[in-house]
Image (tube, rainbow, N blue to C red):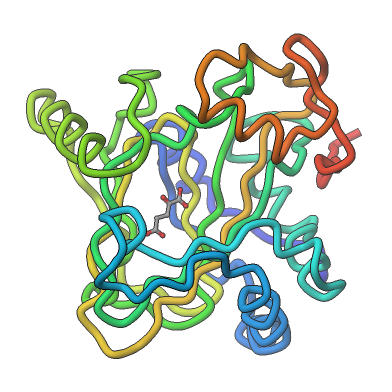
Length: 266
Ligand SMILES: O=C(O)CCC(=O)C(=O)O
């Protein structure tokens, strides 16, 4: 994958102001065609929830969540480690370097439910506000397939409560979005290889998949190089520290063996 990408300054402004931005054509169609089969194959191996859709709770119905696919396949690793993607993440946040937190495939099945409102950073024991997710469809995604939606400006509100993703996060965060009159934005429709980026504190969710097609999305989470591990003061943050920050204790640099530096200006 080549490194060069001309980032539209309007994306930087949107990210800083609203907590989310769209970057069209970040990966080309031929690149998606090359990496998609490997990502889907790795995803099949990583699938841990084999219950039928109707037996799952709200969170389980929203998508199949397939973690750290880069560890399964060299081609997937090339995609997840792409300097081009990491450079965009760094430029949006205005930092010199970014490390990998983890990747995840998010497959919203035909008939899959809505993704409840939530804040990602509730899960992340990272002492920084400079953390970001790239969400990249591997297929065209129109409104009916359940693209992401973002509560603009919510990243500035910080940690809004100990809400893991589910019915409670949907209910409580919807109240905040309404009370504060936050504008809800999506960037649909998407071509394969377009991407959105959102900040760790941005309140976001997604619609249900009303089509007969799988909404195939790959995500990569990055944080600023130099970030320290935060307090392990919630079971969700303990889970994340153990899973994604191997060997790192609170106060340590968040730079374990699973957190390579994917982009550095220096
Ligand atoms: O793809 C979705 O439905 C939700 C994705 C999401 O919450 C995320 O990438 O942070």
